[in-house]
Length: 113
Length: 149
Picture 1 (cartoon, each protein chain N blue to C red):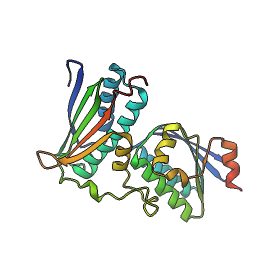
Picture 2: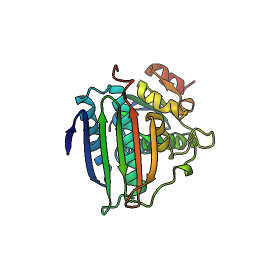
Picture 3: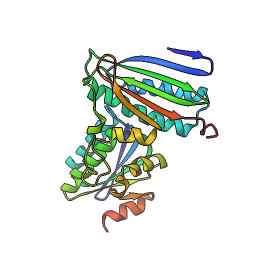
Picture 4: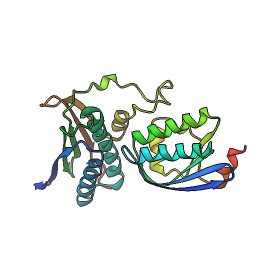
C-alpha cells in the first residue's frame, strides 16, 4: 500500500492506494495513523479512492485505529469508499460505525461541526 | 503447476508460510478465472475468501513456521463451480468457537472476521481435519448461474 499525506488545517488526509491486507498494508496503515497522532493530528480522513482490497486484518486495523483516535478525543472518518469496500464494511455492519463521505470538502467541514 | 482435464482446469501449489504467497495464489486464481471467462465480480469475491483462508492457514494454522507448508488446490469447472482447498500443518481448528463479529459486543473487536467473510463470499465453506493433522478448508462458489456476469 502507498500513502500520500496532505494536511488541511487540523485534519490530516491520508490518500491510500493499493491493498490493505495482512502482512503489508495493515501494518502500513497502523504506522501512518501512529505517525499522524505523534505529529499532533487526531482528526484523520482516510481516502479510499485508490484502495482495491481490504481483508479482515485491514478491517481489524481500521477498527483499532478508530478506537485509538476516539480515546484521544479525535475523529477518524472515511472518504471515497468503492462499492466493494462499502460491501465489505456493510456485511460486518461496520458501515454503521464509521462516518463515510464521498465529497472531500463535506468531509473536512464535518470535523469542525 | 497448471494442467487441463477436459473442461476442468486445476492448479496445485505447495507454499511456504509467508504472507507474500497469498499474492501468488491470487495471481493463479485470477489467471484461471480470466481464461475461463469467470465474471470479474465472482473472481474478486472468491479471491477475497481465499485471502482469508490463506491468512488463517499461515498465521493461525502454521503460525508462520518456516518448517510448515500450506497446500492449495484450485479446481475450476466453468459449467459448475470454482473450488479451492487449503490445508495447513497446524493443530486443527474448530469453527464453532468463532464468535459472531456482527454481535454488538464484538463489533469493535480488531480480529475475528475472517471466517465470517469467507462464509459471506462463498456458497460452501467446510472445515475438516487434514490427513496430516492440520486444518482442511474447502471453499466452493457455484458458477452455473453466473456465466453472464
